[in-house]
Amino acid sequence: MKKIVIVICFIFLILISILLYKYFDSKNYISSDIAKEIAMKDVSNKDGNYTFNSVTYTNENDKYIYILEFSDNNNLYTYKIDAKNKKIIYSNRQSLTNNKEYMMEDDILEIVFKHANLNKNDCNLISNLVILEDNIPIYNTVFYYNNIRYEYKTNALTGSIISVSKLNENTN
Image (cartoon, rainbow, N blue to C red; front, side, top):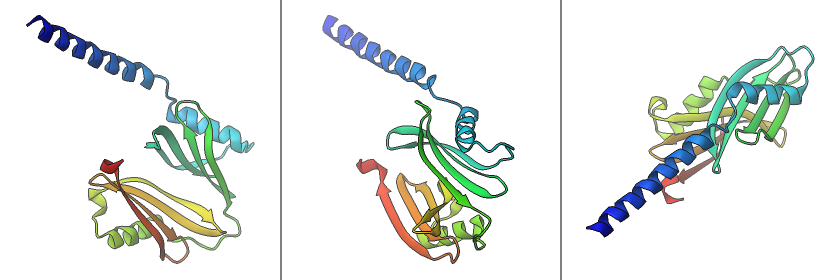
C-alpha cells in the first residue's frame, strides 16, 4: 500500500511540475502588439500609416509565431515573428503600385474549399496570405480539418490551384 501511495504522489508531483512549467513558460511569449512593433520597426516607414490585414498566433514547427500581414499605400508586407525570442523568421515586401489586380480573398477561399469538398465553417483557417513565388502572386492558404493540415497554393491573378498538400497531424 505504501508503494502505491508513493507512486501516486510521484505522478502527482510530475503533473504539477509540468503544469507549472507550461504556466511560467507561457509568460515568456510576446503579445501581438509587440510583434506588430517589431515588424513596423523593421519596415521603418516614417509616416507609420499601416493597415493590419491579419495577425495570427499559431504553432509552426513546434514554435509559437505571429503571422502578420499589413500594408501601407505602396506595399504589402508579410512577417513571421517568433513569439518567444522576438526574432523575425520571415519577411516579404511586395509592391502594390504596378501589380495586376488580385482576386478577392473570399473568392480564393471559395475555390479552395470547393476543391477540398469542405465547408469553410467546419475548418480552422490559419492563414491566407499573398506571397510571391517566381514573381507570381500566390495565395498560400493553410487550414485544419479533423487534425489534417491542408495547404493550398493558388494563383492570385487567375484562381487556378497550383499545389495542394495534406498532412495528418496525428502521425507526427
